[in-house]
Every structure is written in structure tokens, then in C-alpha cells.
Length: 393
Ligand code: FAD
Image (tube, rainbow, N blue to C red; front, side):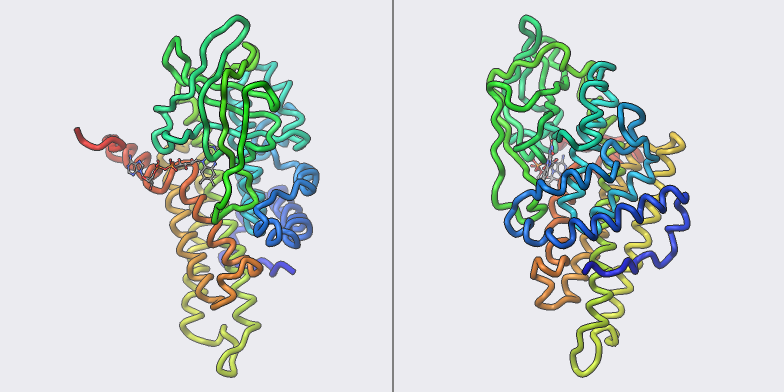
């Protein structure tokens, strides 16, 4: 049984509206019931539990903040809280939803035509179909704006050629958002590629040490034809991907918050139950200090994440603020889960006890949607006026 939530020490739940609080409890109860009992087994197998997709769909959180087209139209705070609640129990499940919702669906909502929104968003919102988002390439990760996949104009559409790497949900996605360089303009454009088109191949990346349930793939595009109506009109340059990433980074910030909450809850229960030297582990000063350190981190992470949502909701959030949220919160979460892993002793390295699993799951989160370094440089550029992504010549 998943432990009760004991991490809201500063009662930040009071900052939420009654609707947001109700959503939080609905998501918490559902993932504790449906996901918690199976997650360690699927994580070990590095397999995705497809049978839970309809249950995640029934939560009505996919599509998050998108209004209309069958999407829930949640506030970003509500969407973020839902992300944290899923991640508190299992980070892989929350990544599955985030890639689908905050990256792929949001790209269609922000950059798609009216016809594309009507065609794709309703079934994606119900998770009847699944989407992925392909920006990264084998040779272009942090330097994604230099990507090499090409889109060449042909009669009635575009021909895509190239490779993508690390793409979450790629092996089974029905809808693939692919970014490619328009060979006429040399700018980055976005395309909606449907599953099973000739020339498209996705292969699962094996041997990941974190987010093992997420099916990350290498995508090969060899003369893949995309009709004109599936080119995203709102992606005319690399800057347009940043419109999506700035919002998505707010959501991703709430994953480490949720993971840290779950780890704290696990440790809090464990220290009270397990005894050494004739006393509960919770009675030892060093253990208490670690627990309090973790709890303090969680309060600070929640308050920064919450403030970020409010800045977004009032139209004041800057890309640098979103990047600092993602980078700082992820660093604090890394510290928090490492302390938790220590507190569980030997059980801290077993995936059955959640903490080791969470410890590993944080590593890819530290890296994706911009590494800690890259997000720091985005904020650094904003506060100093100097871009320092490229080494001095
Ligand atoms: P590199 O860019 O090679 O970086 C290596 C190191 O160098 C890092 O520490 C980095 O911070 C540092 N570095 C690089 N450039 C600089 C610089 N200018 N200054 C200082 N330090 C620098 N991508 C997608 O498009 N879609 C997905 O769904 C997706 N899902 C992912 C899921 C997982 C599990 C993982 C691991 C990755 C995923 N990614 C996805 C890709 C992810 O966004 C990239 O891994 C990330 O951007 C880093 O790129 P890289 O791995 O090539 O590292």
C-alpha cells in the first residue's frame, strides 16, 4: 500500500482552489489504486503497462491547459498538480502523459491549423490515440537548433529524411510530431506524421537505468511523405519550439516535486516502522536531520513551482523563469531522493521500495527538456544579456 501523503508540511494545498484540490485527490486515489501495485514489475521489465492507458485517459488530464477540442482546459496550476500526483507514485507514467500532452498535444494546439486541432486533439485528449514529440537527433541534443533531418517540398506535400533519438512513446505512438529543416528556407518546420506510413521505423532504446517503463525510441525517417495538410503552419523557425518548451518546462518542474513527495512519504513511514539498536530509525538524530532536510526541500520546490504557475497564469512568466524552475527544482529533487535512498539502507537500492526507482528516474528528468546546464544558460542569458551557449572562438 502506498504511504499516505505527509509531505505538505506548509499546507500549500490551501493555495489551491477547491476544484484543484478535488482534481488532486481524484488523481492521487486513481494512481495509488491503478499504478502503484504494478509499477515496480513493469519498471523491472522495462515494459509499458498498456492496460492502464484507458484509466489514465479517464482522469481527463491529457491536453491539460488546452481549451476546446475535447481537452480539459485546466489551469496550469491544476495541470501541474495532476503531474505531481502521478509522478509521486510513478515517474514513468507521468513522463508518458507529459510527452503526449505537454509536448505533442500542446504543439498541435499552439502551432496547428484549425483543421489539425479538430482532427487530432479530441482522441488524443481521451488517450484513445497516443502522441510523441521528436526534436532530438543522435548528433543534436542540447544543440537541437542545428538538427539535420530534412523536409523537402514535393507535389502535394513534404518528404522527410533523417533520424530522431530518445523520443518517448515513439515505438507505439499513433501521431508523431517531427521537427525537420525545410530545404528551401533552411528553417525548422514541424510535421504531423501518422503511424505506419512507409519509410518510418521506430526502435526501442534498451538498457535505460531510469524511467524504464517509458518506451524511448530511435526514429528513422526514409522518404516519409507528409501531406501538405499535416505540416504545422505555426512552426516557422526553431523559436516556435521554445513557445512549447517554456510551458512544458513548467509542467516538467512538477515531476521532480511529485517524485520528492513520494520519496519523502516512503521514508517517513519506513523510519517509523523499522527498528535498529532497539529503537525506530526515526528516533535517531542523523535520520531526523535527513528527513527534515528532505521536507524543507519539498516545501521550497512546491512554492517555486506554484509561483511559476501563477506567473504563467497572469501572463508574466519569462522563458528564463521557466528554465530556472526546471533546473533548480530538479537539482533539489536529486538531493532529496539521494537522502531518501540513504535512509532506506539496503532496501534503498531495491526497486520494490520506490525510493531506488525514483532515484534512477530523476536522472533522465535532470537531462531532458534541456539539461540542468542548458536551462541555467537560458536563465543566465536572460539575467545578464549574454548568450554563452557556444564556446568563445
Ligand atoms: P548533450 O547535448 O550531448 O550534452 C552532454 C553534456 O554536455 C550535458 O551535461 C550538457 O548539459 C552539456 N552541454 C551541452 N552543451 C552545452 C553548453 N553549450 N554549455 C554547457 N554544457 C553543455 N527528446 C525529444 O525530442 N523528445 C523526447 O520525447 C525526449 N525524451 C527523452 C527521454 C529520455 C529518457 C532522455 C534521456 C532524453 C529525452 N530526449 C527527448 C532528449 C533530451 O532532450 C536530450 O537528451 C537533452 O536535450 C540532452 O541532449 P544530449 O543527451 O544529446 O546531451
